Amino acid sequence: MREAEDMMGLPVEIEWAMDDSGLRMLQA
Image 1 (cartoon, rainbow, N blue to C red):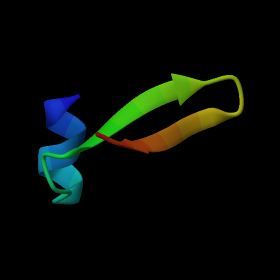
Image 2 (cartoon, rainbow, N blue to C red; image 1 turned 60 degrees about the horizontal axis):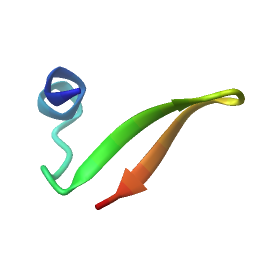
Image 3 (spheres, one colour; image 1 turned 60 degrees about the vertical axis):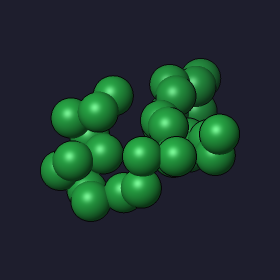
């Protein structure tokens, strides 16, 4: 989700993944 990264200004190394509990942050 590059769009989310650009909007939130997060590093490219951080990826977002959908989980049952909601949105969680994964570090590659």
